[in-house]
Image (tube, rainbow, N blue to C red; front, top):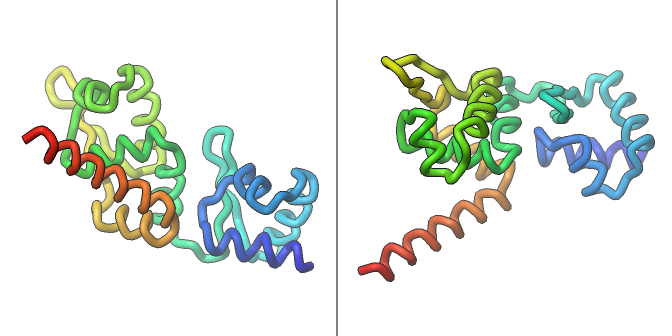
Length: 169
């Protein structure tokens, strides 16, 4: 029971944590974690959402809009895309160039973000323009509240960027 409470507490503190991350963080074997999660799900204290090959865990009653966003920011590439889109709508070619990624890679991640409802796509002549479906302030609040280490990393990146701009003068 103590182990189960530890699992529940971690999921509550880090909603959207993946099954594998949770196992690693708590040092629990896969079978043991599966057992306790089944019990917690039957009790209605947690639920999971499977997207692609990953299983994301949330505490009971966690807002769906926030679920989708936390799933979206769970991978580095999607976080980078969302941060880029916070500047405004972009097409795939511009995003690929800005992020140093291939267009097929950007396309794959954009399709995943569209499925989650985090981004919308609108055809404009020969290209597709992608726009955030969420208010950038909500994205920033969720990152700051539920992924503080990510927030610190983003702040460090901003400081590095500002420092490099200042050195160029």
